[in-house]
Length: 86
Image 1 (cartoon, rainbow, N blue to C red):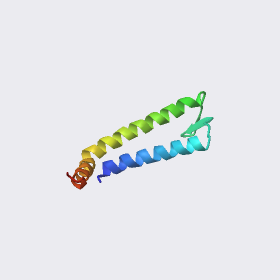
Image 2 (cartoon, rainbow, N blue to C red):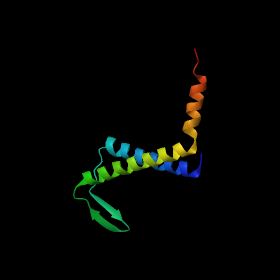
Image 3 (spheres, one colour):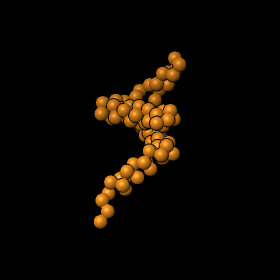
Image 4 (cartoon, rainbow, N blue to C red):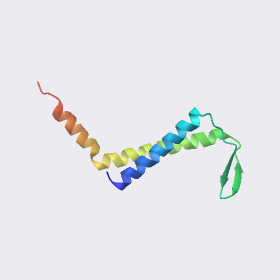
C-alpha cells in the first residue's frame, strides 16, 4: 500500500469512528472552541450534515486511491482464477 492510500484510509476510519461515537453517545454540540475563540452553534444539525459530507468525500477519495493502486484488479483476477470452469 502506498502512503497516499494509507492516509485516505486513516481519514475515513477517523471520520467513521467519530460519527459512530457521536450518534451512539447522543452527543450534542453547544459551542466549538477554535484557537481560544468560542463559537456558539445555533443549529447543530448543520455540523452533522457537514460531518457526513466529509465522510462521503473521504470514502470517495479512498475508493479512488484503492482503484488506482491495483488491489481491486488483483482481487478480481484471483476470484476469476479460483472459479471452476465447466
